Length: 347
Ligand code: ASP
Image (cartoon, rainbow, N blue to C red; front, side, top):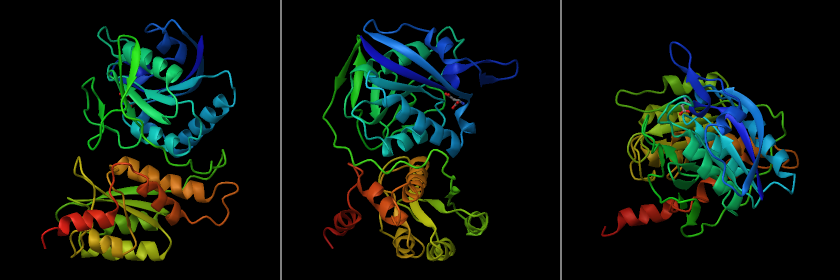
């Protein structure tokens, strides 16, 4: 038998109708009872919290991170499944992936239809997640949904209600779960894990600000005034904004605030192509370009870098250096200089 620990955190997979809308209320055992457990797997359930994932905080994510590490301290555990709301699942999964140093996986899953739906997707997703957790090795944190296994990094919620909720706009799934077995594609190398933050580490404020036509730096300045230690500027196109935003970014980085640039476009990497407030100027102002990470995961990269720099034993570590390492570790992200050269071909 393989032993899998299921950590229940809420989400639609644990939700029922409340009279005026759905909310998470079921305990992990009830979620598990919605479907079958693979024959070769036995399960222990940990009820960590019962929230819809748009309400999660960094403190919740730190508790989840430490609970997974505690569970994996037991050598009889073969893998971990986390049931989670789909809204911010890609954030928690990437957060745990960045700190994951164990060969055994942590498999995130959830559902798009509530636990009490007759045509629900909870049972199938949980079954596939249990199989993946029991058998997968050296895959870090992954997302199992609608018969596919995705690396946490790069995967986003791509549809509000469709059962095929997740995908990587710039990459392929790691594997598939069909007919009770997991088949794997090409292995991917994994970067070294970041130093683990203290269980009760103070959570730094990290904000996301989206640029748009007629945009200015008012919200970015407000975020800095509110004490943000990190900011993600979600640029237009390949990561562009305007001179006001570039000026505010320069002031932020001069104050030691970490700034990353992502894009509001659904696929493709940000690249230093345009000046006049574009990604060329944001990078010159000290912002780091987040490759193909979409905004929610770019924010997690900044948050993780700040927490890792303050982790026990990481004294003197430079958060900007750690963030650079995270961003450059993306298998699909070309180094910025190469993107630049590709753009210059023929000139
Ligand atoms: N609102 C839910 C949540 O993220 C959505 C879901 O789980 O599918 O908790």
